[in-house]
Image (cartoon, rainbow, N blue to C red; front, side, top):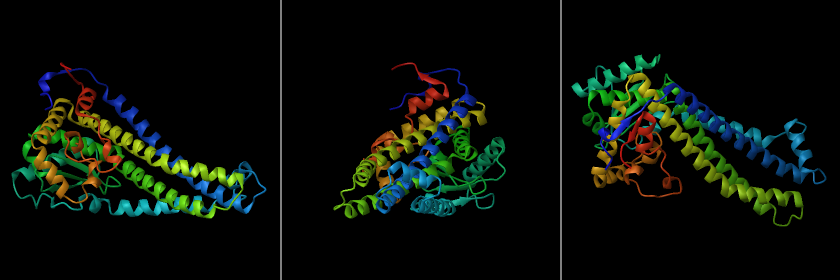
Amino acid sequence: MTQPLDNFAQTAADWRKTLRTNNRKTCFVIAVFFLIYFAIGMLVDVYINAGHYPQATLSQIFMGLITFQLFPLVTLIMLCVAAISLLITFSACDKIMLLGTEYHEITPTTAQNVAEQQLYNVVEEMKIAAGLQFMPRVFIIEADYMNAFASGYSEKSAMVAITRGLMQKLNRSELQAVMAHELSHIRHLDIKLTLMASVLANLIVIVLDMFFYTAVFSNRSSDDRSRNGLLTIIIILRYVLPIINILLLLYLSRTREYMADAGSVELMRDNQPLASALLKISDDHQQNQDQYSADYRNTPHENVRREAYIFDPVQAGIEPVASLSDAFSTHPNIKDRLAALGFKSNGK
């Protein structure tokens, strides 16, 4: 069980420095994804043109592509497909994030009780504190476990969703801190960055797989050393890139959480409410592990929400390892997050 907050010593923390540092790291990860995507497209074009111009060296073909003496068709097609996929994902992100859950939207006129009205008021207060121009849509998910997330491709399209269990088990200041955390995701625009990175990562693997099988079956009788060398590179990338994708997405997700935690403290002007809320959420998952494990498994499309949640249930042993990506937690552990908030354990 997680230690109570009294067992942590409070220290000073520079929240603005944390925001600046994590923002630079986030932009770096996105830039890496774009460079990988560009490199894959160029590799495909070089491979195709090496067959068309067997007398040319790989460096000559590459220079021809980047100077448009040779038309980089595959690279441009990949970039267009990526752009279209991102637009489709952005337009349907709210529906995708809520798939499989029982939920309803809260407005000042549809709030069914005092607790729901208080939730809406809290989000509105934090929206003003965050300086957001638009009020995010507010949803309650009918679930006992404690969790929350934000989504949307822009401030205008943003939404926040929390489970009924979280709304009922946190006091007002803790609820305020959690909503400040989620609105910080919106304010930092990292919900859009993460969504973009996820789509690009999946497209990279799909396109690389298609090209891998095409290259293997079309290259069986070829003695061209340049094309054989490129095929070797493609084979290596096919197995290495998925691992790089996973690590970059996890790194991006963990960076997002530190940024949102720091943003919550900046809006609340107090680091204790969020620290207390995180401990309550972690303890609640550990105390109800069997029940929540069944709840998460029985709710379709939980993997879609996992990266967006304020708390990764894997840290409490809720979700079984079903794939390589599930073997890694998408969030920093609670002690690291508390340390970043300024609370370090007095014990081990």
